[in-house]
Length: 327
Image 1: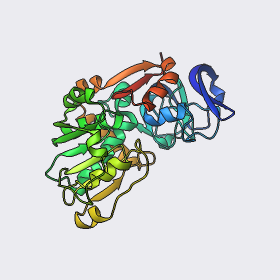
Image 2: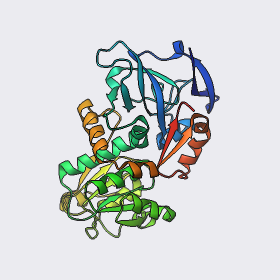
Image 3: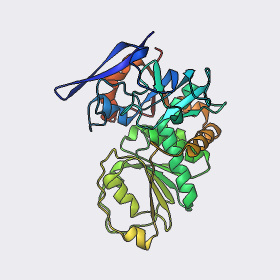
């Protein structure tokens, strides 16, 4: 049997992609085979499609860091034909073939059964970004969220959009930071109570501590933005850092941590424990407003994936981009 896929190849260190037909026997090893319905386009996918950062070492390669679909074959007792499943993390789309193909074969340990109330499209309308956002929100709640608004940086992107909506649905006051003022109405519709410009947070802080503005923060940017935000946290508040779009350097001091008791929490959705994944997906099912979820999602076909990688790297993609692998 043949199936369609986005296939990456490398020649003279240059990475290129094309839509091609593959055979079932070309799939990597695994004990579960999935008929893929949807995948997503994330910032990391943009890097992989453009050969940025050496995230992929072995070519040819099928990218796509997450997907939802239906089990078509399984030698593992936990999954049977017809089970609806979702996959995020485990370096799928990097070290293992990913979601930009009509079929995937992988380790059963990496899958989570979809909650009954969540469709395959809805699962990828949040995808890795939604899982990351939920893990970040839960980490803030575990530490205790303060009385001041919760800040979300990079709010117009995939992680940020879902984080704004989830925090609002959970009853928190939300401040959304973006470098694109034209997205303000979009962010307010998602549930933001105020919009903060990226420039305001990107400026170097006047000192090691500033006025207490935020009762918590989900940071999807990093670098100078994260350094600035740390100086403005409420006493005992936490920052859940989950993105490096602005870079991985952090020029700060120990003062926010010593004198304000600020907590810096690292969020990594790649290999989080199975129980955490199941709980996070169930809570996503419980909190997500389906109408808003639809508003933040753009669905594209598999043929559009190769050129959209550059668009997301350039910051020209708003909200969540879902790939309908079957079209």
